[in-house]
Image 1: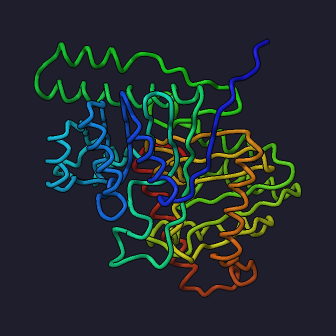
Image 2 (image 1 turned 180 degrees about the horizontal axis):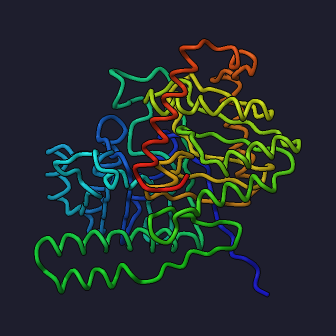
Image 3 (image 1 turned 135 degrees about the horizontal axis):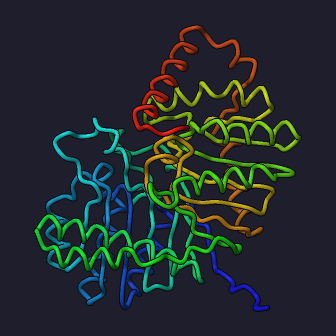
Length: 392
């Protein structure tokens, strides 16, 4: 029996860790750079990543960028010109039409954050190409950096990331060719897109995807399976938290059998509706003994979890309907004690220094107005799920 091939995995905290690693890899690239992101903001430190992509393209490296049509409405004209002149190829996933986001079908976004360089180094996480101290919803700089995570990976997983990204690129090319009435080119692109991807279902390190065809519930199942067999503790940080019944039940049952379950959720929020809807779920969790911490130091953007100090996941998927039912997401799921420990230490430290624990008694006794707002927000979110035709 062959021994499993080892991976070199490194935890990256925030853009302050990720961007220098991306730039170093892009500056050393010899053949290819592929990048997918929901937000590509060229202000502040984001410009450093854009410059690295331009430098790579000018050296003759193939550089392919995919951004989401909602997260990144349009690249600035200056950067479009620079990318065009350098040869950076960029595509927009599901650009908004005149109907905007009114149709539920338009809520299916590209939310994953992936990069692969020379088919030898991959990055996966929740960090957009967005300066840690900048936020689209806030004027000026944030008082503290946004809290988020990613991993860099060398090893067999890189081929899965590369296959995933090239498949999406081929599908976007097929749509582009069809719009230009080049049917043969579109068929060629679709044939390339339909090549099978080798996503291993086993091993200590896996790429777990969510899409609307083959991997509709894979990320949620990975969470439920890990929480369902937890013996000691579950530490979870999630920016947008409104899980379905089965995942909530897994958290409750874990707490009831003596597992210490700690959740780090938003306190300093960007969007009122999902924050208040999330608070509607606290009662069931708190009653079961789940510890809930609300992060106030800055914006929480993380989507990570650690179970029993060994199992961990880092990725783009929130535990809410948009991520679990509609968006394209990508998480790395791994069994690695060293990385899991480092991630748990970071999240627990954030709970202790940047968050406030929700007091169960104070939650029960909160005012009628707060209870009403939480309930209405939850109803609106559930109605949105109903409009998609999905069961949650």
